[in-house]
Each structure stands twice: as C-alpha cells, then as structure tokens.
Length: 355
Image: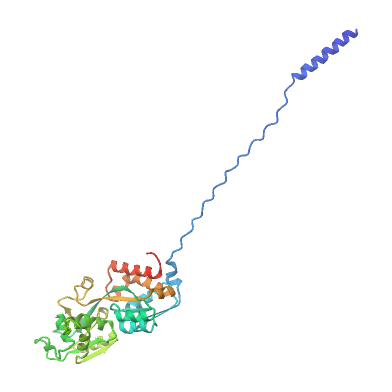
C-alpha cells in the first residue's frame, strides 16, 4: 500500500516537472529602438558685402568747402557741374571765381589758396615750379574742348573769312580795315580782347601772334614778341569779362574781338563768327583739329589736396563722370572717350584706388 502510494506521488512529481519544462518560454525584453539623430549641418559662411570704395565720394557723403578759381572760359562749365553736384546731395560750399587762367594759377601755385584751378590751357613750366615751391604737384584733368571764336558784329558785311596771318595783322599793326585788304573799308579797326590774365589771351598769342612775330635770332615763333605786338595795337580794349567784349563788338560794324565759343553761342543773334583759313568753328572741326583755334579745357588739383579733402576728390570725380552729359549744352565740345578715360585713371591714382 505504501509502495503504491509512493509510486503515485513519484509519478505526479515527474509529471509536474515535465509540464514545467514544456511551458511557454519567457517573453524577451525588447531592445530599445535607436532614435535617429539628425546630422549636424555644416554652417554656411555668410557672404560679406565688399564695401564700395567709391561710396565715400558720393555727393551726399561728403561735406566741407571747395575753393576753385581761374579761367573765365571754364567758369560756366564748372558752374554747371557745381549745380549738378549740389542737386545730387552735396551740402557743403563751393566757391568758383572767374579771374582768368593765369590769375587762377597764381592763387593755386603761389598763394596756395585754392583747391582747384580752372584753365583754358596747359599749365606752364614756370607755374609748375611755383606749385612745387609750396609743396604742390599739379595734376591736370582734361574736361573738354573749346573753339576760340573770332567775332564781328552781325552788321559787319565785309569780314567773313581771314587767314591766320591776316588775323595777326588785324590785332596788331593794321590801323584800318583797308590795311589788311584794299577792298575793305578805310575805317579804324576797333579791337576787343580778353585781359592778359586770361587763358584765352595766352592761347591767342601762342596760336596767332607768336607765329607772326618770329625771334630774329632763332627764326622761331616768339610769344613775348607776339604779346608785345598785340598790346601795342591802337583802339584796343581789354577785359576779363567776356560780356564786356560782346557789348563792344556788337556796338560797331568795324569792331572785332575773340573769346570762347560758348559766349558766341549766347550772343549769336548780334554777333557772327569769322572763318579761319576757310574753317568754321564747330564740334567736328574742333574735335578733329581742322579748326585752327581749338583748345583744351582743364581743371587742376593735387593728390595731396584730394586725399586730405575728400569733398574735393568727390567733386572732381563727379565732374569727370558727368561733364560729357552737360558740356554741349554749356557751349563746348566733349573730349574724346580715350582722353576722358585717361583723366579718370589719373583721378584713381591720385586718391590711391584701382580703376
């Protein structure tokens, strides 16, 4: 009995053990799912705008005084550029005095009073030396071309065309018109010319009077003799004011004078030009050099002035980059594209910039 009970218990225990072994397997703990990590973006460098080196020379970005003086011929052109510069935002003060090229260089090179010198001729070597003596190295910027107009009254019915040789005689030794050509009236020649400080006077002496008055020793044109000849002429009136000359010439059919072409255009109703060697002053004849009395127009300054006074550099830059738009309206002729490019290159060098 006991054996049978023991055997039953043993079988029951074995069954329990087998069932335990065959039970469901334990559920494994799941591995954590990795959270995707966004890759760190490589920072893109922010583009830094390159400062415009010319921005400091814009009219609205400069201030201060600008003092200019010189040629009465360049004066109306500089006045126009001053007006435009102020319209574009310049709030400083610009002074422009019309005193003649020579007097302008006196103030610029000897007195050192001006920032810009206006000139209707190239600076002379003696004037360069005067500038250097006060520590100034002048730089000339070509801004246009002028034709010097020889004019008579609109009532004059006999002078239409003269040679350079006749012109020299008219403004020196001839007393009457008939002394130049027998068929002309036996009436005194009345002469109205710019003053001796004017670049117009200097140019006329160089182009007309010097070739007619050669040095007896060298046989070459002599400006000193030419100047003496014109100043010795009778019935001669000189003035730095071109309007005075206009009034004098239009007042008599026997009068003659000369000044910049712009002043003739302003008074074309009462005056008329005289052809020189058969050539009339026009934009084409001035540019191509066939008109014998065409001349360059300049403004002068120095690198030191432009670097110490940004307002001066700004005005000159504005002048050079806008003058072609204005010059014909003023009455002069634009310089060639190549000449204006060269003037701008000089400006860049003066202020230390690359074109």
